Image (cartoon, rainbow, N blue to C red; front, side, top):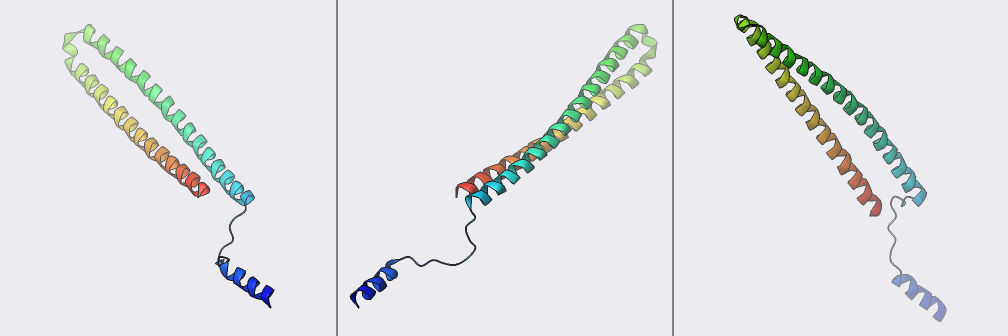
Length: 131
C-alpha cells in the first residue's frame, strides 16, 4: 500500500496535460515554412518581373521625353513665328512629364506597400516559428 500511495502522490505532482490540438511535428513546421517561403519567392519573382516591365516602360518614356526636348530645341531655333507650335509642344512635353512622374510615383507606392506586406508576413512567420 505504501508504493501505491507514493505513486498517487507522484501523479498528483505531475502537471495536468490539457488535451487540444496536437503540436505540429518539426517536419510539419518545416514543410509549412518551406511552402510559405516558396510562395513568397514566387511572389517576389512576379513582382521583380513587374518592376522590370515598369523600368522598361520608364526607359521608353524617358527616351520619348528626350526626343521631345530635342524637337523642342530644333523648333525653337527654326523660327520665332512658330510660337504656337512651340507652345503646343511645350504643353505636350509638360503633360507627358507629369504623367510619367505620376505613374512612377504610383508604381513606387505600390511596390513599397507590397514589400512592406511581404516583410511583415515574413517577420510574423519567423516569430510564429520561434514561438
